[in-house]
Structures are given as C-alpha cells and as structure tokens.
Amino acid sequence: HSWRRAFWERNRPRLERLVPLRRVRLADGAGRCAGRVEIYYQGRWGTVCDDAWDLADAAVVCRQLGCGGALEAASSARFGEGSGQIWMDGVNCSGAEAALWDCPAEAWGQHDCGHKEDVGVVCSGQSQLEPRLSWP
Ligand SMILES: [Ca+2]
Ligand SMILES: [Ca+2]
Image 1 (spheres, rainbow, N blue to C red):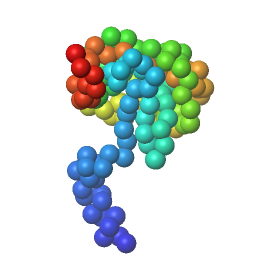
Image 2: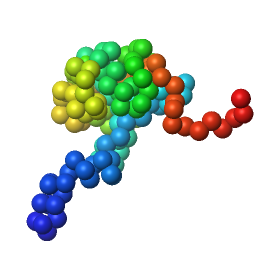
Image 3: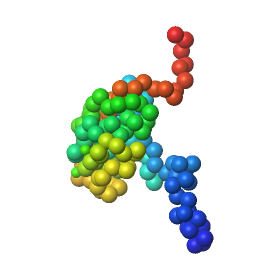
C-alpha cells in the first residue's frame, strides 16, 4: 500500500503529535517532575544511559514535561535501575531542543551501558497537570 506510506510520510509530524510514538516520563522520584528518565519507543518503555549526561540534557527533559528548569542531572541509577531497553546513550543536547530525541546521541538502542547507569532528573517545577486528590 504505497499510498498509505506516502500519506504517512507527508503527514508524519502532525500524526506523531496526535498519536505520540515516543513518550518520556520520570519514574520512582518524588512526583512526576523528578525521577528516572524513561522513554517509550517502539511499544516499549526503556531508559537512558548516563554517558555524557549533564544539565543541558536534563533541561530538555524538564521542559518537555512542563516541569520548569533542571536542578539536577542524576546518574548511576540514583532513582533505581530501570528495565527493558536502554534506548539512548551519549546524549548531547544543547539545551534548546524541544524533545530529548531531538538531541544528538547514539542511534536508538545503541549503547555500551547497563541499567546501573540509568539517568534521572530533578526539575524545578511541580506537577501542573495532575489533579490534586487530597484536600488542602
Ligand atoms: Ca550531554
Ligand atoms: Ca556510551
């Protein structure tokens, strides 16, 4: 079905915004704006290796999540070891990218790491998106 492929290629940026094929979240931290960086890609959640991980990279994740600036770029699985794929390694953001996967890095899934090197971030912002479930 080449027409389908052509349609997809022509509309890819809009379609990916409607149906995100890649997502990012922070796991096992205090709230949704701190924790281990996890990336959803090809139907599976995975992690990011700490080789070259720094504050510029963390800033991109924090902005992408609507969590303000980055206070810390955590390495060595400070928020615990993830599981599954290690999707990114050698991440080298300038800090201006809209998404972590817009940053220069090794190819998806190419790494020389173990989960003991999973990265995390601590962002300055609090969750703006999650409803509060308790009374003040
Ligand atoms: Ca970096
Ligand atoms: Ca590496």
